[in-house]
Image (cartoon, rainbow, N blue to C red; front, side, top):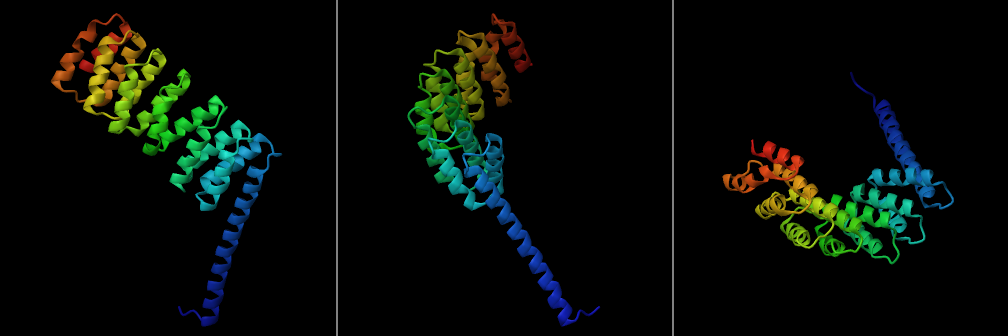
Length: 251
């Protein structure tokens, strides 16, 4: 069937109009959410919903306002935490995002939950660039900061991260942090990580840490005969939980 030139023109015009209308609607929706996100007089919930919209939009133009919210020390902590999470998933301006996260983390008087969120997000982004900051956080007086830093470093999982975690494990006094460090070592699956977990399984004074070391070693299967032999003494561990985990691992 032949289509007349006039009808073809109208068809193309209609399609163009639909595309333009759709683009204008999307732009209008973005602008509306941007205005809500930036207005401190709006409710916390409304702003968080708008910030989430910006973060999931994938739009390059969302980067600047989200960074502005992140780095505004006068903003509510919950709003800033929302910006942290959305920047990680935006998929735009990685170097700017990491720089902004590090800047915000270093603010004097920053809230603990805000810092926890930043550390978690740097791990989620596998931010090798931030290993110096994460390394410093491993020595923070706050055990929860050290916990979150261990978690983040574990997500990165390269050789440097393993060295940082192993070094800290040998110094750490808090059993919850040590338990998180051994879990974090499972992200690397390197020989150094495996050997460190075996040592923790056999010698850590906390049954919680020994149990987590056994559970984490499951990620390293198949274990070599040498590794299995080294782990065998843990079958006589004082803790029933540890004995059960090791028995399951060596079967």
